[in-house]
Image 1 (cartoon, rainbow, N blue to C red):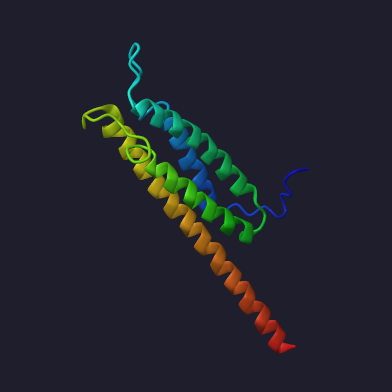
Image 2: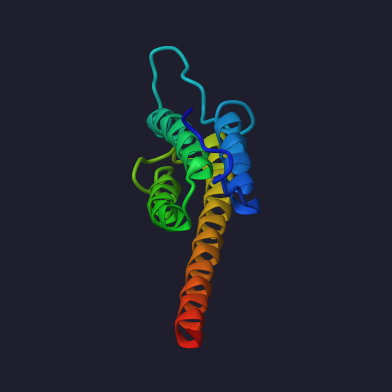
Length: 151
């Protein structure tokens, strides 16, 4: 068996990260995609969209793996990695890969906006999760010190 259910510690932040990752995965394909390729002309935003699709799949896999981690220390380390992943994804549309020049294009008005909003929410969730696990580790250290003093 891969997952030991008795040691599984799924928190609200795990569920939130997974749900937001699903929203981004579906959203970048359905609700806020980049401009469509027309004929022989491939706009610059097409490549940003392709990269965002790949990143959305990686984010969902990472969120599920994070959820299945049994240890708070492992989750804290994964949260740091996830923050880096979210930050790079935040920078893809319009910064790392250029978008269309006209502001009213779909990639500017929808894709860039919603990617930014979802990535900020994911980063805040990962930071909250990391702070939670750090506080749990601090409480555990305090408990150990108290039991050592009483003995």
